[in-house]
Image (cartoon, rainbow, N blue to C red; front, side):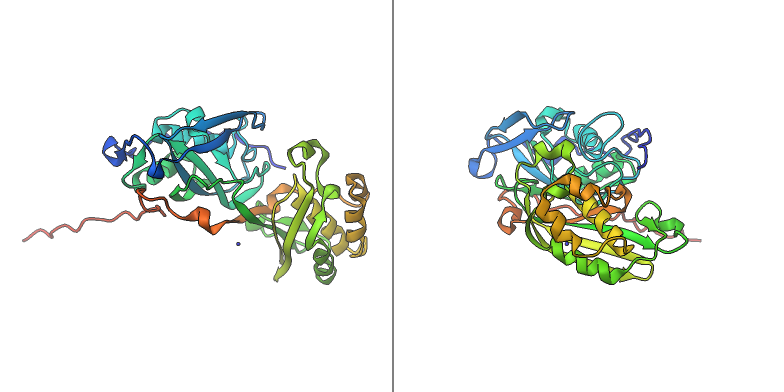
Length: 339
């Protein structure tokens, strides 16, 4: 490399066939006899409990897409439902393991209403697979239609969904027209003000580079991000007719940083404030300074598009099956009846 109340979600019945024991290899130790480490997130979003996986575990990587409209974000909680909760429910049925044994970790804790095309997570099993296609198909059969696992692959012990990240790419979509496109209503913020895109493009470039983004983090979650210095690699503003797409790539992002940056850019686009306000707010390192001009943009315009990793950590380990990208169903040819 988009605030609605989440509706009640029931995981569909397990209609697909789950992988049979013949699809599993049980080994005394994983490839290279390496030790795996992960942290188990509790329902409050903390990572106080650490699970150390011994030499009998295998690590797996998932690439996940979801429409976040009716969910309460990624982070685990049973009610209202979250993406992590439903992924874990499907995994426990497919693997026959408990949540504490899976130790599922996501790369990004997207908020309620935020979407993802390229969310990444990893988990553990005490066994290896011959093939991942059946498990992959079973997971998607158990998940609701607005969550899909796009890729299922083995992972090296060095890989970590969060700590191996080199950069993340987010997009924020703004529909800039007097009348909203009803097909974009869940994925783009509707701005009825005619925006000055040249001013937005100018202001966005002030974010590029390494800065202290304390002014753009919500105070309720600052404890999760002890280092407020982040490197923004690029901030592109793409015009597609009435649809304006803001695409930002960075080494990492603070809690609601992207939505706060977008909110300021919207005010600049409305010509309420000049583009050069950005470096002044950055220099203040004070969230109250941003609050004088803007509040966070709504979540439904935001989408986690892609996560880039250390390439060495993406290699497949020896002795594990090839990655699964899903499979097509085929119809067996039958002989026509003779008359």
